[in-house]
Image 1 (cartoon, helix red, strand yellow):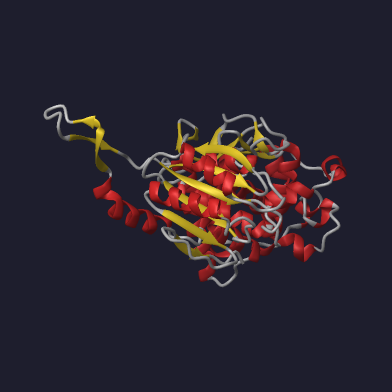
Image 2: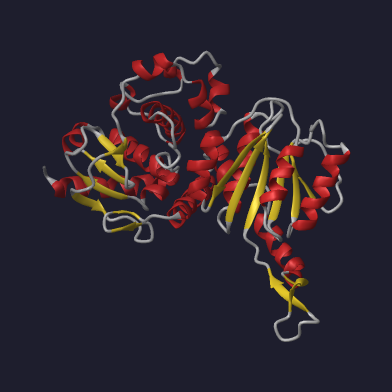
Length: 405
């Protein structure tokens, strides 16, 4: 293995990508890259390290080298392994490969030595028009991936590959990696999110932005609801009320006077409509909003359609991906009273509450539902209705209209 030759080639590739595919260059510049025989071709380890087999590398054309290294960088930047959850690893890898490769085809020409084994959307065997398939998220495609595609598609097992030791080509961003592996915690996801956003902005400056890349950035990475502004306003509005007096706990100094009780803003409750009237775009938008909130505080999610599906808590954005997204259920009719009762019983005083729905809710006008909505709003620090369709006006609740398209 001539490591010096590989280093020289790698540096030249990075220089070429600055002009040819700035998005790929941006995300690749943050990654840790090593040369090792621990993988047969190329892979992303479970610790977020890109591994390249030197023999495989030596057989690739210049275009092939650029495509492969960019492919692995996208796996890391889009957090494909973190989003695996309880899904079948092989099936999820196939889907991620296909979507990432389609995006790369728009960013750089697919070289001939890659075309033979690169997984594509057209090669998945789905009976869906390719243009429609290109609009779908990885999660959506995974749900409809046929069993025969999992067994028939040939690919290298590169998502969550083993091995993390070898000759280092690139150390990686020290704010992302520590001691040869990605740091744990949501700050790493935030750094990758920043790399994707920066790469997207640079890609826009050269005028070539694939629609698939735009959808990812405008979806998961750029939520429509300005949660930071909303929560700051809520803190200002509720600050004076976080200390209340109560005769249930008399003052220790003067028993004839009420004592005080202090409340802290703890979490945000999200009631997510997963009924049959909610399409994939609307559902992904709802989850995007929850993901954005989780950067500031813990969140609790209650999915509901004709029933409510319990409470799922997430203390970080990483847990929104691994716990919340993996537990979404629904598809039936839409009633909200049961979800409101659960929230009212379990929330703490001054918690924030958000309802994400199209508000085609059967029992919305029922007296019991209205009473529950009023009680939840009164107990909350801030109460927000986020609608993808109908406009509603409910006292005590702030209304926001989104456009999932």
